Length: 193
Image 1 (cartoon, rainbow, N blue to C red):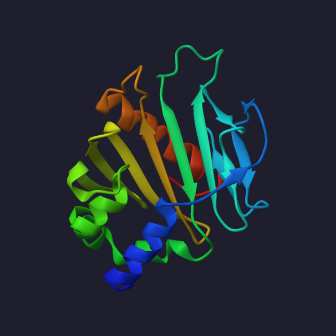
Image 2: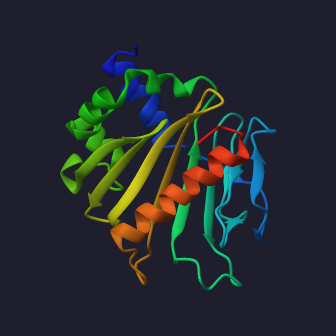
Image 3: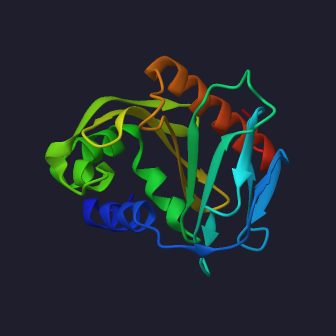
């Protein structure tokens, strides 16, 4: 089991990934390889990857997805997938109670906050969902949204489903979008639900 300091270091590295540009345009494929095929990013129905806004470094990646232009039935949402370095999924062995405690701490909330200030984030709920850990958050800058943390092929992956300044995402719809993104991620990597 990782120490709280190790847990914080790994999660901080994942949450603050720096990335470089990798391509342009949207793709509507149901899965896309990242990090030279180390894992697949699953794309829920109705959403497309924005390759122009997504990026990879040598050992980490950030993938942004939005509603496809021809998928007007899909909920308007921004889905962000952040993939940590190889071995980063080890923090998941801490288990749900330890993760919940960490994310409710000042250090954990500061890590989750868009501003980096713990006082800007409130953890509404922290709960397990199979092999994933879900966080329902209220962020002063991002509003109310859902985030998931899961280990895939030894890498820590976080997913978030948010709205935009122009179009807010209802929390219930946000959780559904997040659950759909988790299901697509599991399916793309052949992980049983």
